[in-house]
Length: 200
Image (cartoon, rainbow, N blue to C red; front, side):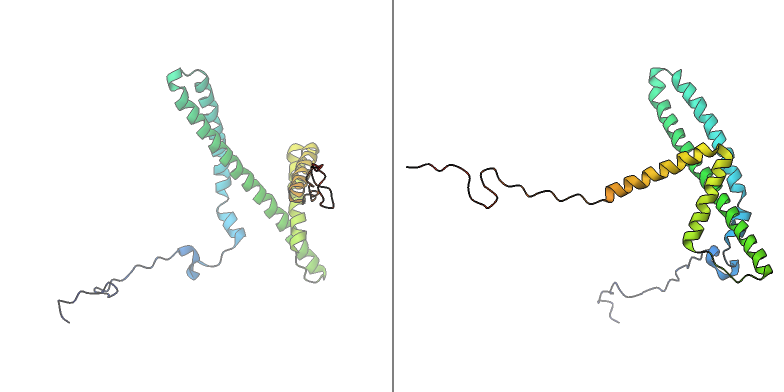
């Protein structure tokens, strides 16, 4: 080929092998994903979250005390630190709540699976849980745990709060009643003018 002709941009001059990245989690060698095994192996994370939450709360308490006794030139910086810690505490609280909720749901489903196995041993046919039944089972388990930890009053408050939220959602989605069409003041309903005409 002539050296006077420019090489096109599309032409591959040097063949370079591109590295192919593989995620070991999704390789067939690592086996199939099982939620029960995963939760069993990583249950130490829930303990870490709770210990971290207590630590963060202690730091926040100290930071608030420092903020009260801080001079004016350090006040803005310390306020920023307090807000950062508050956000971190909220994040960690949501993580701890999520861990607790997952544990409750897992226990409820395990209990149901055990009961079903015992019933099958007695001669009952195979039965699979519907989505709606699963949802009601999990909600019931959540409320039972809430009743154990905080009492029945907390359960009634939680139900009322949920109902209020649903009602507000329904109210927002409700279509508004059509407004009556406005008739101009100087016109009657049949379209004729109601103004007095000047007689010349």
